[in-house]
Amino acid sequence: MPHARVPSAPVPAASASDALLAEVGAPPRGHALVIGHRTLETLCGLIRRGCTGAAELRPGEPGALRPDAAQIAVIPDPASLAEAALCVAIARRALSGGGRIAIRDAAGRHRRELTTLLRTQGFVAVSARDTPHGLLVLGKWPLRTQRN
Image (cartoon, rainbow, N blue to C red; front, side, top):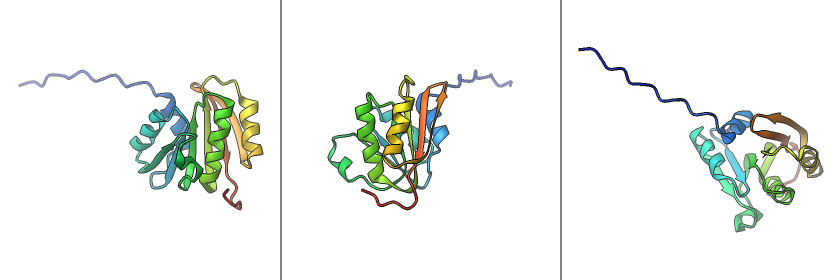
């Protein structure tokens, strides 16, 4: 008896969060922190990629003052530069030496401001580039720095 062919489901287009995580890389056995008010899609993406230590924080939450240590901090599309600054301050407290930060600016309008923000907060190897899902700003927390 011949087998009926089942039509294959279309492959969904990569979401902005999937593209962001592909660029940053999720630490499968490490800790990743997603910071901001638009975190759910990125948090779920980390979990789908096997990152069992994924967590989220919103500025103003009690845990934001003393976040758990993380190897990577992701800020997906902050609503304003003020929100970005709050999120970067949380990331500084959470990242261990050598930890990485990634900010996605979907509108791509704040390249200079976001790179300056990371540099003035002590991040090194700061870079920015355009992607199909907006501006991606990356930085690294120095190895020899005390966490605040």
